Image (cartoon, rainbow, N blue to C red; front, side):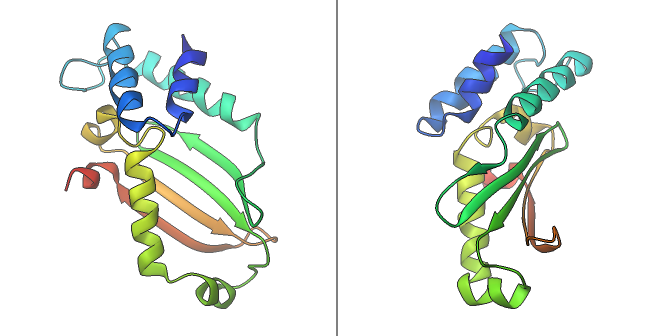
Length: 153
């Protein structure tokens, strides 16, 4: 069942379907109730660890010619992704390439509509979404974190 859920959460082309299928699967497995509240924390955490592990073995992964996804962690309190951008070594390099306010909005739109973002279980239970950009020395250049419940606003 976990592999199916992993496939479901990673399919970004059908976010509405992913949301309803993922949440319904959790309800059917009796991990959450009809209000999307977690009722079996142990099994829910175990499932999130399984999802994280299945994604981890595929990383690092090229997203496009300039972007590489280095890590992703899925837990109840946090969904976190770490990226490296080609040729971006300093915050100044980043600011030359990206207008951060627009990029923050893009990150929010992405997180709210893709993968696990549409799932009500993460919104109801206060999960934060975090995207970090690091340089080749693994120094953090950018971090944008927001609560997934803000997607409903």
